[in-house]
Length: 287
Image (cartoon, rainbow, N blue to C red):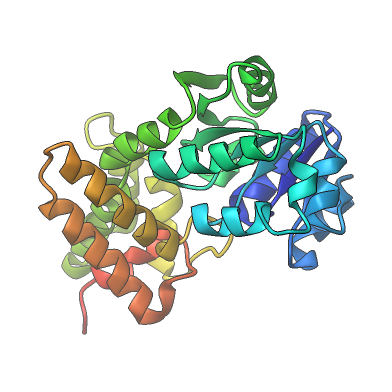
């Protein structure tokens, strides 16, 4: 039995993928409506966080950040459930934050591992995920099996803390994808060129191909953005976390600052909850 706490875009994708893999899944979300689809697929719906933890052998926690995760796990009503619990964090954290969370969980008799989900929710939902796993020695093999049900690419990156490091390092290239696609889309729009030519260039051309352009370009062209995927606000927050890590490594940060500014601008324009492709709104030609 596996519990998933937090059924936003990534949490629901993880739960759905595990259900498709034949696992018994319990889900919990503060907003009950976000569990309805999963319940129809066969998931059990827990009435509380404590119930979700106590009813499962493994618990995957998918919350926005370290602060929210700590507030939930260490609230007085949930602390007793941590004894003997095997937990795994999915939220973006710094290595210091995840180590502190793990220390506090251990104080209460549980164990906390972490994973970096290196793809959007849809591949996870379809069991085509890529993961960087940093687990406790006691639980590494079991978590590898569990995430192996969600994709063939589960990479052991070492002890707890290293998945957060791997995520930050990978983000240094990942953060350019949406912005690169949006710049080309904006140029094609301004020049009156056919969008299908750009779609072909960025998806079929081995020289110009940009990851996820096939999903982002149609949204940019229609200016209709998904609400069930990684959002502009998620991205702005994550880029903000990565900047000091890049600086600590002695890497230049001017480009990171510019990307953060673009996503912040898109959020200010009202697209904070929209898919990352809505960064286009901060780049597209203004009339």
